[in-house]
Length: 104
Length: 104
DNA sequence: ACTTAATGCAACTGAAAGGTTGCATTAAGT
DNA sequence: ACTTAATGCAACCTTTCAGTTGCATTAAGT
Image (cartoon, rainbow over all chains, first blue to last red; front, side, top):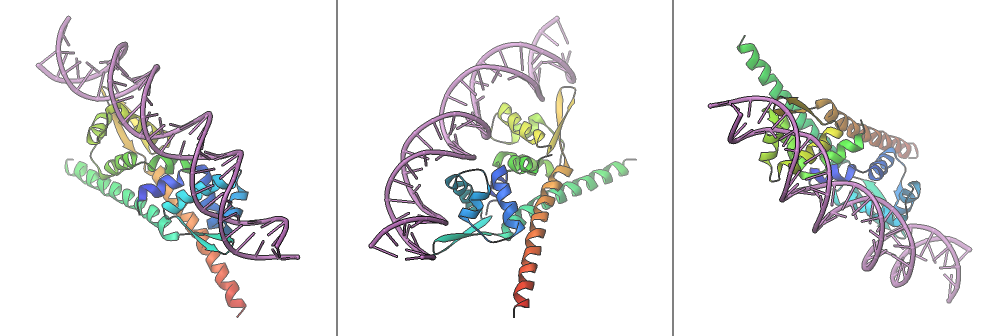
Protein backbone atom coordinates (compact mmCIF):
# COMPACT_ATOMS: atom_id res chain seq x y z
CA UNK A 1 0.00 0.00 0.00
CA UNK A 2 1.40 3.31 -1.13
CA UNK A 3 1.00 5.98 1.49
CA UNK A 4 1.10 8.68 -1.16
CA UNK A 5 -2.01 7.12 -2.68
CA UNK A 6 -3.72 7.27 0.67
CA UNK A 7 -3.02 10.97 1.02
CA UNK A 8 -4.01 11.58 -2.55
CA UNK A 9 -7.32 9.83 -1.98
CA UNK A 10 -7.99 11.87 1.15
CA UNK A 11 -6.97 15.08 -0.58
CA UNK A 12 -10.33 15.70 -2.20
CA UNK A 13 -13.25 17.34 -0.42
CA UNK A 14 -15.82 14.86 -1.67
CA UNK A 15 -13.78 11.79 -0.78
CA UNK A 16 -12.77 13.18 2.59
CA UNK A 17 -16.42 13.76 3.37
CA UNK A 18 -17.21 10.21 2.32
CA UNK A 19 -14.59 8.85 4.68
CA UNK A 20 -15.85 11.10 7.44
CA UNK A 21 -19.37 9.79 7.08
CA UNK A 22 -18.20 6.20 6.88
CA UNK A 23 -16.22 6.65 10.07
CA UNK A 24 -19.22 8.27 11.73
CA UNK A 25 -21.11 5.02 11.47
CA UNK A 26 -24.25 3.43 10.05
CA UNK A 27 -23.92 0.86 7.32
CA UNK A 28 -23.59 2.26 3.84
CA UNK A 29 -24.09 1.06 0.31
CA UNK A 30 -22.90 2.74 -2.85
CA UNK A 31 -26.34 4.28 -3.25
CA UNK A 32 -26.63 5.72 0.24
CA UNK A 33 -23.14 7.17 0.09
CA UNK A 34 -23.87 8.71 -3.28
CA UNK A 35 -27.22 10.19 -2.38
CA UNK A 36 -25.79 12.09 0.58
CA UNK A 37 -23.39 14.08 -1.55
CA UNK A 38 -24.33 16.50 -4.25
CA UNK A 39 -23.14 14.49 -7.24
CA UNK A 40 -24.47 11.74 -9.45
CA UNK A 41 -24.18 8.13 -8.48
CA UNK A 42 -21.63 7.50 -11.21
CA UNK A 43 -19.58 10.46 -10.06
CA UNK A 44 -19.61 9.18 -6.51
CA UNK A 45 -18.73 5.73 -7.76
CA UNK A 46 -15.53 7.06 -9.29
CA UNK A 47 -14.55 8.61 -6.00
CA UNK A 48 -15.29 5.36 -4.22
CA UNK A 49 -13.04 3.56 -6.66
CA UNK A 50 -10.19 5.92 -5.82
CA UNK A 51 -10.71 5.07 -2.16
CA UNK A 52 -10.79 1.37 -3.03
CA UNK A 53 -7.53 1.64 -4.97
CA UNK A 54 -5.94 3.37 -2.00
CA UNK A 55 -7.32 0.55 0.17
CA UNK A 56 -9.13 3.03 2.38
CA UNK A 57 -12.42 1.25 1.78
CA UNK A 58 -13.55 -2.10 0.46
CA UNK A 59 -16.70 -2.91 -1.49
CA UNK A 60 -18.64 -6.07 -0.68
CA UNK A 61 -21.49 -6.99 -3.00
CA UNK A 62 -24.49 -8.47 -1.19
CA UNK A 63 -27.10 -9.36 -3.72
CA UNK A 64 -28.46 -6.22 -5.25
CA UNK A 65 -26.51 -3.64 -3.33
CA UNK A 66 -22.90 -3.45 -2.27
CA UNK A 67 -21.68 -2.60 1.17
CA UNK A 68 -19.04 0.11 1.62
CA UNK A 69 -16.66 -0.75 4.42
CA UNK A 70 -13.95 1.44 5.91
CA UNK A 71 -10.51 -0.16 6.27
CA UNK A 72 -9.08 1.18 9.46
CA UNK A 73 -5.58 -0.16 8.95
CA UNK A 74 -4.90 1.97 5.92
CA UNK A 75 -5.93 5.15 7.66
CA UNK A 76 -3.70 4.12 10.48
CA UNK A 77 -0.71 3.80 8.22
CA UNK A 78 -1.30 7.31 6.97
CA UNK A 79 -1.29 8.50 10.54
CA UNK A 80 1.83 6.49 11.29
CA UNK A 81 3.61 7.99 8.33
CA UNK A 82 3.08 11.50 9.63
CA UNK A 83 4.04 10.43 13.12
CA UNK A 84 7.30 9.09 11.74
CA UNK A 85 8.02 12.34 9.92
CA UNK A 86 7.49 14.22 13.13
CA UNK A 87 9.73 11.84 14.98
CA UNK A 88 12.60 12.41 12.59
CA UNK A 89 11.96 16.11 12.76
CA UNK A 90 12.14 16.06 16.54
CA UNK A 91 15.32 14.03 16.54
CA UNK A 92 16.93 16.54 14.25
CA UNK A 93 15.93 19.41 16.52
CA UNK A 94 17.38 17.66 19.52
CA UNK A 95 20.62 17.06 17.65
CA UNK A 96 20.75 20.70 16.66
CA UNK A 97 20.15 21.85 20.21
CA UNK A 98 22.91 19.61 21.47
CA UNK A 99 25.23 20.99 18.84
CA UNK A 100 24.46 24.57 19.83
CA UNK A 101 24.87 23.85 23.54
CA UNK A 102 28.24 22.21 22.99
CA UNK A 103 29.54 25.31 21.32
CA UNK A 104 28.64 27.60 24.20
CA UNK B 1 -5.97 25.61 7.65
CA UNK B 2 -7.92 23.14 5.58
CA UNK B 3 -7.00 19.58 6.33
CA UNK B 4 -8.10 18.48 2.89
CA UNK B 5 -5.47 20.82 1.45
CA UNK B 6 -2.86 19.22 3.66
CA UNK B 7 -3.72 15.75 2.38
CA UNK B 8 -3.89 16.99 -1.16
CA UNK B 9 -0.43 18.52 -0.85
CA UNK B 10 0.99 15.30 0.58
CA UNK B 11 -0.73 13.23 -2.09
CA UNK B 12 1.92 13.71 -4.73
CA UNK B 13 5.10 11.64 -4.89
CA UNK B 14 7.38 14.61 -5.51
CA UNK B 15 5.94 16.71 -2.71
CA UNK B 16 5.87 13.82 -0.28
CA UNK B 17 9.53 13.20 -1.00
CA UNK B 18 10.24 16.87 -0.40
CA UNK B 19 8.56 16.73 2.97
CA UNK B 20 10.40 13.54 3.80
CA UNK B 21 13.73 15.15 3.09
CA UNK B 22 12.87 18.27 4.97
CA UNK B 23 11.89 16.21 7.98
CA UNK B 24 15.10 14.23 7.70
CA UNK B 25 17.12 17.33 8.46
CA UNK B 26 19.78 19.63 7.11
CA UNK B 27 18.88 23.17 6.19
CA UNK B 28 17.40 23.57 2.75
CA UNK B 29 16.91 26.35 0.26
CA UNK B 30 14.71 26.29 -2.80
CA UNK B 31 17.75 25.39 -4.89
CA UNK B 32 18.94 22.49 -2.78
CA UNK B 33 15.45 21.04 -2.56
CA UNK B 34 15.02 21.34 -6.31
CA UNK B 35 18.37 19.87 -7.26
CA UNK B 36 17.72 16.68 -5.30
CA UNK B 37 14.64 15.79 -7.29
CA UNK B 38 14.52 15.03 -10.96
CA UNK B 39 12.66 18.12 -12.11
CA UNK B 40 13.52 21.68 -13.01
CA UNK B 41 13.84 24.39 -10.41
CA UNK B 42 10.65 26.03 -11.63
CA UNK B 43 8.81 22.74 -11.47
CA UNK B 44 9.98 22.17 -7.93
CA UNK B 45 9.05 25.72 -7.06
CA UNK B 46 5.44 25.04 -8.02
CA UNK B 47 5.36 22.03 -5.73
CA UNK B 48 6.85 24.10 -2.94
CA UNK B 49 4.11 26.68 -3.43
CA UNK B 50 1.48 23.98 -3.01
CA UNK B 51 3.13 23.03 0.27
CA UNK B 52 3.23 26.68 1.29
CA UNK B 53 -0.47 27.12 0.51
CA UNK B 54 -1.23 24.07 2.63
CA UNK B 55 0.94 25.61 5.36
CA UNK B 56 3.14 22.52 5.46
CA UNK B 57 6.23 24.60 4.84
CA UNK B 58 7.18 28.27 5.01
CA UNK B 59 9.67 30.12 2.85
CA UNK B 60 12.01 32.63 4.45
CA UNK B 61 14.11 34.76 2.13
CA UNK B 62 17.63 35.41 3.44
CA UNK B 63 19.42 37.63 1.00
CA UNK B 64 20.02 35.69 -2.16
CA UNK B 65 18.52 32.38 -1.23
CA UNK B 66 15.38 31.44 0.63
CA UNK B 67 15.15 28.96 3.42
CA UNK B 68 12.56 26.19 3.29
CA UNK B 69 11.21 25.42 6.72
CA UNK B 70 8.88 22.59 7.72
CA UNK B 71 5.86 23.55 9.80
CA UNK B 72 5.34 20.76 12.25
CA UNK B 73 1.98 21.92 13.50
CA UNK B 74 0.25 21.44 10.18
CA UNK B 75 1.50 17.90 9.78
CA UNK B 76 0.31 17.30 13.28
CA UNK B 77 -3.20 18.43 12.45
CA UNK B 78 -3.27 15.99 9.56
CA UNK B 79 -2.32 13.25 11.94
CA UNK B 80 -4.91 14.41 14.45
CA UNK B 81 -7.60 14.37 11.83
CA UNK B 82 -6.97 10.71 11.06
CA UNK B 83 -6.76 9.92 14.74
CA UNK B 84 -10.17 11.49 15.21
CA UNK B 85 -11.64 9.45 12.37
CA UNK B 86 -10.34 6.30 13.98
CA UNK B 87 -11.73 7.35 17.32
CA UNK B 88 -15.22 7.75 15.92
CA UNK B 89 -14.86 4.49 14.10
CA UNK B 90 -13.88 2.72 17.32
CA UNK B 91 -16.74 4.26 19.24
CA UNK B 92 -19.14 3.01 16.65
CA UNK B 93 -17.73 -0.49 16.88
CA UNK B 94 -18.05 -0.46 20.65
CA UNK B 95 -21.65 0.67 20.37
CA UNK B 96 -22.36 -2.09 17.90
CA UNK B 97 -20.78 -4.69 20.12
CA UNK B 98 -22.80 -3.51 23.10
CA UNK B 99 -25.94 -3.71 21.03
CA UNK B 100 -25.19 -7.25 19.94
CA UNK B 101 -24.33 -8.37 23.46
CA UNK B 102 -27.54 -6.95 24.86
CA UNK B 103 -29.54 -9.04 22.47
CA UNK B 104 -27.94 -12.29 23.51
C1' DA C 1 -43.74 -12.40 -15.37
C1' DC C 2 -43.17 -7.49 -14.58
C1' DT C 3 -41.40 -3.52 -12.53
C1' DT C 4 -38.23 -1.12 -10.01
C1' DA C 5 -33.91 -0.24 -7.61
C1' DA C 6 -28.78 -0.87 -7.42
C1' DT C 7 -25.12 -1.32 -9.98
C1' DG C 8 -21.44 -1.54 -13.95
C1' DC C 9 -19.21 0.21 -18.00
C1' DA C 10 -18.00 3.59 -21.60
C1' DA C 11 -17.68 8.00 -23.88
C1' DC C 12 -17.38 12.73 -23.52
C1' DT C 13 -16.27 17.50 -21.65
C1' DG C 14 -14.13 21.26 -19.07
C1' DA C 15 -10.97 22.37 -15.64
C1' DA C 16 -6.91 21.65 -13.08
C1' DA C 17 -2.32 19.86 -12.46
C1' DG C 18 2.47 18.68 -13.45
C1' DG C 19 6.05 19.96 -16.01
C1' DT C 20 8.67 22.60 -19.31
C1' DT C 21 11.13 26.86 -21.58
C1' DG C 22 12.25 31.69 -21.61
C1' DC C 23 13.23 35.97 -19.65
C1' DA C 24 13.79 39.46 -15.91
C1' DT C 25 15.60 40.60 -11.31
C1' DT C 26 18.42 40.82 -7.43
C1' DA C 27 22.19 39.65 -4.26
C1' DA C 28 27.20 37.77 -3.48
C1' DG C 29 31.77 37.15 -4.45
C1' DT C 30 35.98 38.51 -6.77
C1' DA D 1 32.14 47.00 -12.11
C1' DC D 2 31.42 42.28 -13.62
C1' DT D 3 30.01 37.69 -13.29
C1' DT D 4 27.50 34.17 -11.41
C1' DA D 5 23.99 31.96 -8.57
C1' DA D 6 19.23 32.06 -6.61
C1' DT D 7 15.04 33.42 -7.44
C1' DG D 8 10.37 35.23 -9.53
C1' DC D 9 6.94 35.45 -13.07
C1' DA D 10 4.48 34.13 -17.24
C1' DA D 11 3.24 31.39 -21.20
C1' DC D 12 2.62 27.11 -22.89
C1' DC D 13 1.71 22.01 -23.40
C1' DT D 14 0.11 17.49 -22.16
C1' DT D 15 -2.08 14.55 -19.11
C1' DT D 16 -5.05 13.64 -15.45
C1' DC D 17 -9.26 14.35 -13.01
C1' DA D 18 -14.02 15.41 -11.64
C1' DG D 19 -18.22 15.20 -13.26
C1' DT D 20 -21.75 14.26 -16.56
C1' DT D 21 -25.04 11.48 -19.75
C1' DG D 22 -26.46 7.20 -21.71
C1' DC D 23 -27.15 2.44 -21.87
C1' DA D 24 -26.86 -2.44 -20.27
C1' DT D 25 -27.32 -5.77 -16.48
C1' DT D 26 -28.88 -8.05 -12.55
C1' DA D 27 -31.45 -8.86 -8.27
C1' DA D 28 -35.85 -8.01 -5.25
C1' DG D 29 -40.42 -7.40 -4.45
C1' DT D 30 -45.19 -7.83 -5.82
